[in-house]
Image (cartoon, rainbow, N blue to C red; front, side, top):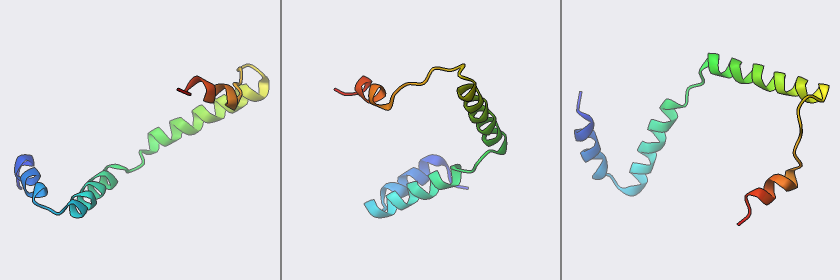
Length: 71
């Protein structure tokens, strides 16, 4: 197998569109869902929703959030 350095050198010889496609392919290969993480997010979102329904968490108006980040 070629080294990372060799692969990077070859990649720089590609046309820009080909390099973008290569980057997309690499990123896509890394974007595999982790079932444990997915289950953790489901549990977290359910817990937050239940807390919201009980009234034990404070909500924030969307307009207030947008104002925080306006320049």
